[in-house]
Image 1 (cartoon, helix red, strand yellow):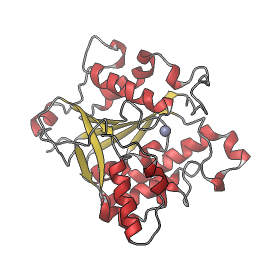
Image 2 (spheres, helix red, strand yellow):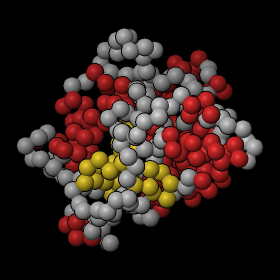
Image 3 (cartoon, helix red, strand yellow):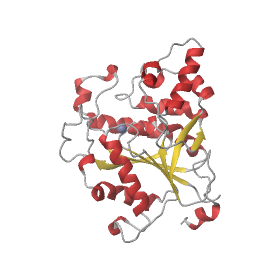
Amino acid sequence: MSAPLRLMAVHAHPDDESSKGAATMARYVAEGVDVLVCTLTGGERGSILNPKMDRPDILENMGEVRRLEMERAREILGVEQRFMGFVDSGLPDDESEPLPEGCFALQPLEVAAAPLVAAVREFRPHVILTYDDDGGYPHPDHIMTNRVSVEAFEAAGDPDRYPEAGDPWQPLKLYYQMGFTKERFEALHEAMDARGMGSPYADWISRWEDRPQKWPVTTRVPCGDYFEVRDRALLAHATQVDPDGFWFVCPRELQEEIWPTEDYHLARSLVDTELPEDDLFAGIHADEVSRTCH
Ligand SMILES: [Zn+2]
């Protein structure tokens, strides 16, 4: 294919792009795909999750600190990245707590989706990655990220919708990120246990409900060679990622051996494709790509 393929990943906060689908993006970048990360909020209300960075001067400037961390991660992943300009809603301690006024999750859908529709029409992705409708985890911004991504996928190709947001463009496939499956963590847990490394995930797995996955994995993208890039991008988000914490308890070599893919659910497709897939662009043919180039 001569015209480049284009992949858009939609995320709620800076750091989400490095913990969800980062190795996939690094692999496609290496293969010549244009990749754009759209970050809906600035992560202003994130807490400091790395004790080594827990300093008042950092907490006072979270918006700016996270912007710089994002820029560093962007360079490491080799992607383009844009902020969509919304304000982080924060993760409430309990559900009864009201969300802060003006935050992303409280925006009407049409307002929240408009910048993303404009980005889709300008970047013209063939494939979009987002979270499932539970947000992957119950942060209000993650749930809203799913809603605006589905809205953008459905509306961007329709000239009657968001008419002020540019010329219509219809993406071809929409995927949900499926990295946090019980299946994957059980496999890693068993491998670590078998090697006498202890079982850091045991307690977590035991609390995981035993029910079929709402969104089954349809697509496993081999990207173990890029886990190293993923880990460097994660560490660039120094306020959010503890180098001695959760993300790094399972040795990278073991992950490459036991689970060398990042996994997705194909939520919408306008092309014919055979499941299971191992490529996000499966079913997208050269004529569709050349039709859509400048
Ligand atoms: Zn997030």
